[in-house]
Length: 276
Length: 256
Image (tube, rainbow over all chains, first blue to last red; front, side):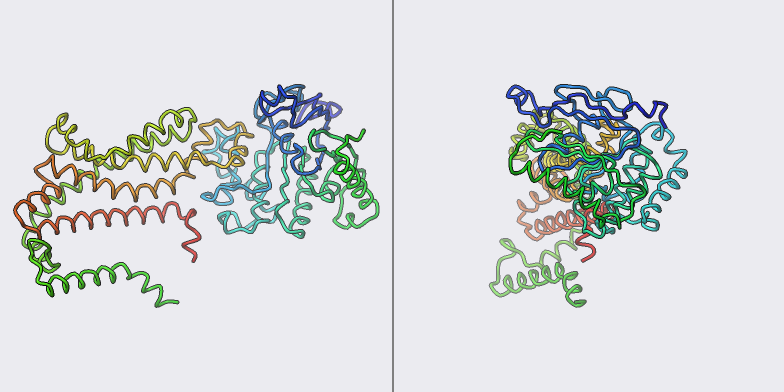
């Protein structure tokens, strides 16, 4: 996909600070501060932390929807100064368009992103095939012509993830995508995401407050503290891949989850910054 | 469950029938003079007697209203689009529009007569002036209440403002639009009729005034009846179009 050597980081945050407006900046109140981050090509990272700690802000920085007040962000070797077109995004709410069928919802990014956009009319058949195949891989084959409101919450979220992936982005940003689902559906979707990531090797940045989810899926987990929003812990997850759901019941897995839980617990008690 | 549904379906007709019967009974029992308050039977008689005249006036009122309403759709949609998609335009235009909407549109008729003379000019413009406001407000609301997540999904892909508007904003505001058409069409009939009452020699409004001054109360009432029927028919038409184009927004009520 990219000609950049795999040693160069794909996403690079260099001492990034963000205040939401000038007033807050003058008062030195930052939503996130001193973020340093290096993500390798194809790496799956998860960011965990208490709610309101700036996880979603971090996402907006990464996609270029917001510019940092200080510091530099580079993605795929390029400085970020506007919305990136190489990323796909999915949120806790599936946010599908109710007047479009599932298929048309998934096709939406192709109507926006070049080079697909200008060829959309001529190559529509081909794109539809592609969307149908993608829907198949997440278990939504046969639901393409259904409208979003005819699908269950889990199915809508699958469709939403398909929409985030249809234009083959190099980076997938997920903001608590499984937060509103029941436990069984959530674990099913973990596996779906795991398989998609294994097959397509895109970068994933997953924001979540579910520690088991982060440990099961990610290569690296970052723990974020609340006000100030900082990365306080970086934890490599060296569990072998491919990971099976069974792994979540092994002591190694549980130990990591406990360790992360400890960091967050300590943070909530003291509100103190823990050194890496 | 089924007879209840049937009842619901026929309820408007049944209610109307009940009112007409009661009306007839009251006017007959108290022997009300037909110059004061004609009975339904008398109105019906006069309607048949003057049906050619009424039809002519009704046609005139109908097409004049449609012209004004068409103008209201074009201007209302464009203005709503502008207000809903730009914060500056919203801040600048909205207060002025509210003030304008508070003015009684009948008060414009004499001014319009000076400008355009007696006839279709004032009637079309009055219908337009009275009916564009709800369309504008609804389009603007539909566009302005866009969920930020939906916008982010597109902006992350590098979508321009225009893309967001065309792909999400506009389809999303369609139910609001059709909702507003149903309100606006009834208002447009009000506008035309009011204008015709003082500034035309044709149309239902003119018929009402001339029938009134000739003490033909039955005829005056049939004029009202015809306007009511036309407005109701158009309302139902837009209701039908709404259901078949934006069914996704009414799925709750349809499946029930």
